[in-house]
Length: 274
Length: 261
Image 1 (spheres, rainbow over the protein chains, first blue to last red):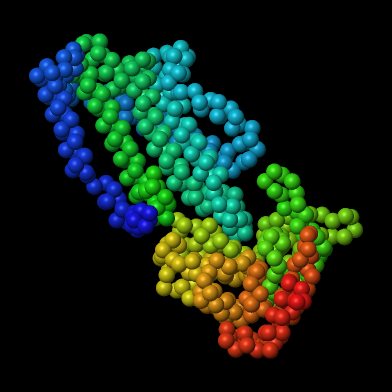
Image 2: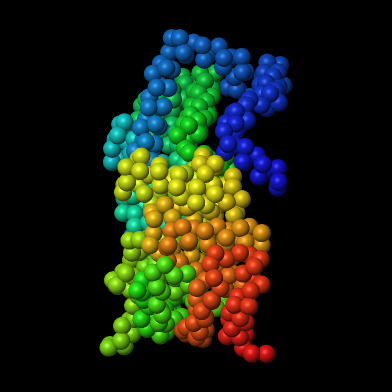
């Protein structure tokens, strides 16, 4: 307990980022060990699974894809759509979340609809999006935005509504205007919660982009996966599986680093816990 | 001249279920300019509600036609926080902005009203008054409870208020810190001439600080006693608390609150 507190204070005082981003050698060793066992299982036919490539084959396929194939274009497409869709979802989600968090009447009228709609997995809208928008970029983008909005919206509402009443009284007492109150009190107070929503939203956006590419829009990593499967080239297919995972890790790390640079010290204290 | 006037004040507080409970009824008193007045009473009696009504954070309930239920500050009816009034909240942890440094917290009420240079002068002045001039850049969570409450006091002083409303500001502090802050408040009171309305549940504290102690009692509550404290200023923790005037006033407040035994 005491130790945790100590760490969170250190994290807030500035030397935290190094501590958190430091690589973990033991974790890397485990990954290497798993790859080695996998390699051995496939190479010595201990596990006789058709179409399961050895890690070494995946590495070779990756080199081929990156140099001669469509890999780079696909990667750029998926990252681009994910980031663009997430950006739009973030703006809409935070804006709508502020409105619903601050305006009890709007909250009362709309929360039931939101609870119902939110419970439907966004992936179930893929067929509908396909019918409405066809095999297009538009269809992919709509899905990504739709999926990404929810966590941002819900966390923003939660963050705004859980602001201490005293803090709002402070704003009233100082005769701050509504825009001033939002900018100086509501947004910073809700920020840790908003950032959590943004991070959850980002990973959902990536999932939906890849799914949309697999079944609808013929582009990106998802499409690479499907075309490799159709060509019965499992090693190439796994290149795209790994790439999707790496994109997720890199985007999340990027968002975290950005948050650490942009957010003031006091807000960081709360984020480090998530 | 009366700075604050409460006239037949009536106030209801809503519970979570939406039912309204009548907390104050027929509360009338005046606070003169430059006076230090404490409001006392059992916990839950409505002291904080009264202070919130005076601050313009809580709307009073209307009386039957013919008698006004209202608060006047500087002769004008209070509707929303009046210019020139600062409120110090009891809970300093949730009323300071944790993402702002000490200086930026104190600067908050001045933003958009004064130039950068003027703001810096005011912030320096306010932090000097509460003895935190060397903790400009500290973050609130790095400070002790007493220091955080000083920051809140500095923020309230930065706008140079004519009246300072304080809601049990030292209630959560240890005895030594409390005594220190009481004396600091008295110094500030002497230096600025600000009117102070101070809510507390500590009899000793109320008598030590105030010119008058008002006692709230009943359900709904009203002012049941208005006890003057004749101890001369400046006061000191040791001498004032041993003086006959202090003891007499303390005795009176005890009598009103606990009855004669």
